[in-house]
Image (cartoon, rainbow over all chains, first blue to last red; front, side, top):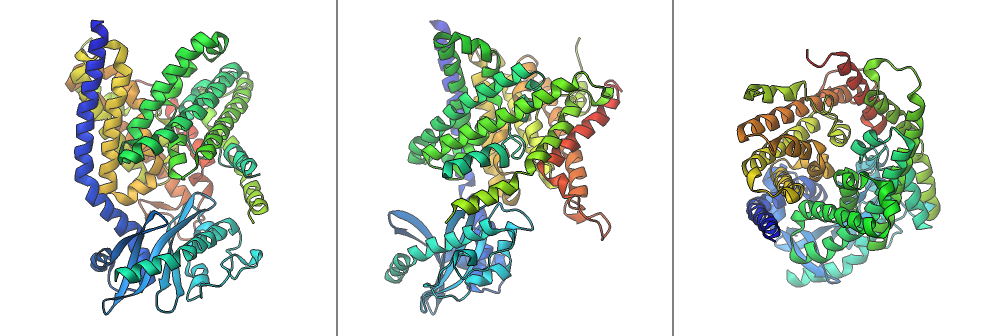
Length: 197
Length: 199
Length: 198
């Protein structure tokens, strides 16, 4: 009996100390990790979509400052807002779809006034270099630039308007799927943003 | 149909051992003989499917609910270790023949990076519960397949001439590379299959 | 036979060099050695965990009951792995994205649990520390070696800097799975040519 008590005590003690240590480290790094994700992952894509020409380090505070969290269909969505004269002019938010390698995360930009797609940015992907990875190239992304929302965003093989990358149909299809998902969410998000601002 | 694609993907195209680099330690240690290989293969299929279903539930119902996702690594490995212990005890009583067949491989599986790896992958890729179970099952089958293939080849090599320096692990690695290359060829099937099923 | 602390440290660089002499820790060796940067990152992360867990386990070895020792080791090792995970994401974000899944997998790196069981649980703290540090750094060097070969042949660069001539056609095979296996096998073969106690 004594043996069991000792085992339980020691294990609990170890677990407790480790738990405390971990939550301390977590608290200490939380903010910084969030910043890193914004800076490295979404920042460059947002900057590109909104057409900011300043250096990424200078423009990040503005991008972060104008970020808003809204709830759509009971899901939290982070929306980046581009303001002109303090009124929301354009927005961008993330969408994703399963590509060839893994999830492809796409940032989709919308012009609030004209209800157009301003374009897309690829945030993360695990596609094959030289093939699927080419969805990041502007040649492919231009397929979505300035398009109206009623266009059929599928690859040409599926009777859509998008020129898929040769040899990378799966990746191209995935990006289209992500874009379609975001278009479906757009009306609700637009309403939400307009209300808040 | 979707599951057939998933199966082919997990077993052939993205074989967790030969393409995703998971499960190498036991792979090289256990593939010297056919029967040890089959034993380990079976054990992995069993444990991986079980472990993934439990870790999936733990993640979605406990970690996310409490907001402690960052403890994923430590919680998962503990779940796996505990699970392996439980399975061992259960098999000893309920299916002693199977227990004997699996032998020492069962406890060894705890440190098999494939188990933890697949569990984490299911979370990362946002797989649903049923999807995760199938993914784990097929990945394990892929592992077992690679293992058994390898054992068959290695047994042959026991009686061939190999320079001393390359004996054992070194030549095993080179062979694994060649098999990996063969599996590389399966990448073509994947795209065609996906194109056929995606509408 | 009492071994000096320097012996415990340096054996990690040859006699007990992972993954060549001490055939453990193969998964990361194959997976993250596409570039030298990744190799160094993984090596140092593993060294950190190995060093810390060796020290802690050696310090409290007398109070851990035998029956729960593996469980205790796992908890301790996993704690340091999570710390590494968080710190990496906070300060070395791009690297953490590259290493991805394999950072949490450090917890099942057989080297760490192996040393805890075989060494730290029996030897004094300063020896365990030297052991952990030596083997960890040795491992890092091995990773650097393999990744140097793979990066040079597969991308033509080392640490991102071009080292091959302009018209060099990269040997793409090297950066994919098959290349990793073959490369490791051949290097292991070469190292095996040299007798253990050089």
